[in-house]
Length: 368
Image (cartoon, rainbow, N blue to C red; front, side):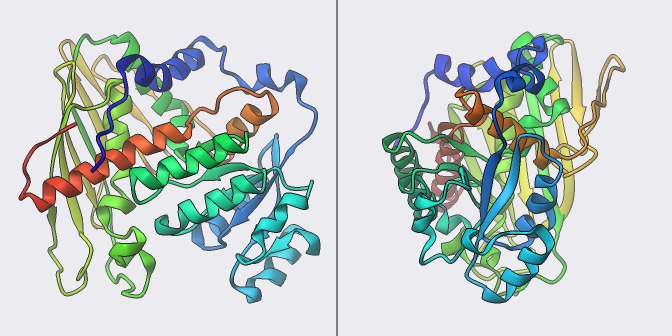
């Protein structure tokens, strides 16, 4: 695996700089919208559950972007989407002719909502079409694929952002700000666990296919790994990992549960878990002079928590995906860096690759 270790300055610039802006009130849609000229047109690539049930409805709630087009390999879905959202024929594409979006001024952004193994291919096509790229997490299968996406976006001078919706969520952003301000003293230990119980996984679904990015590590691992990083404001120096299959007859080629242990340069440690076989959803940060937590920390709604001093972390957001897409649209409109750039997504993939190496080595510690 290629070595990947960002500098402390660069990491903190990504993880805590924007958090500080948010805490100060500078990073505000109301400020950046002042010179707004129009709404950003978004085309969704892949019309599965996340696009159908979450992104498309959220786009109806946004202020600075709108659903302009679709890309699908399922012709039977087209009339349903056109009737529901009023999508013009000229804004409907297949995977084979997606590159023709280059000639469509209605579409400014192409949002990749496909199995992880397809993210690189279609992100590069989107960038080469001269459109801004929003890519769901996990960003790709490997660091090399991430670098390919970043390179294509840089070459075509388009923005790239990764769909870490929680980094736009207000209570999560408070936790990110705490990583910088340390109101409870030095951070000692982070516990980050995210999982759900899939009672009857479909063996033909891509999430059950190793080559497509299935399994707990890829499907859910980005949540606890990213949480451990934004809770400390640091990139780890070491990781060890192991897999568990309580139902091997169902999870034949992918992991059902993944465990990660991280060590950070400032001395903090993290205990992480990702699962598709157990319901769990907690982020707890223990410090020298207290603690704080979010429970749940990665749900689509209701993210909230409390501190050891009784302060409630209970800011509300009407729709996480709408907030995320509005923030990302404003970054394009105002020509400012996006909140979660491609380099941020690549850090997670570097950790996942290191975790895989650890598992293959019997849980040995991998230095980063």
